[in-house]
Image (cartoon, rainbow, N blue to C red; front, side, top):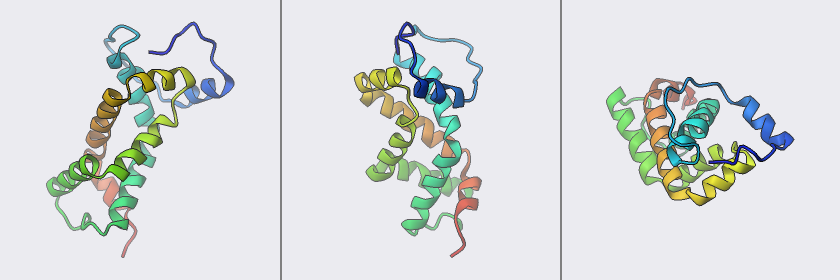
Length: 142
């Protein structure tokens, strides 16, 4: 986890100020991937929620996926398949989130990239699956 003794730059402080406050009940040690998940990934995903949904909706539309006509269970399955199989979409989502990291967070991310990408995508899948009606609404009419 980022070193809290390092002073934040103005851009880093601005990034942190944008994030929503989340109530977190228990934390791992400050320098663990689990702690990073709660202190960084979850707030960044919440901050970027609308953009995440828009990116998925645009991808669904650009690839002519019959999302709007599917039932909720099928939509959730489509989201899972898209976010686990499509490398381009996965890296777009990862970039959308990583772009909101502070300099110390980015350094920590670079050390634990594989594990953090896995966790980030798990959280993103769950978040989009829980909001499939919103994704369908974001699709422009054909």
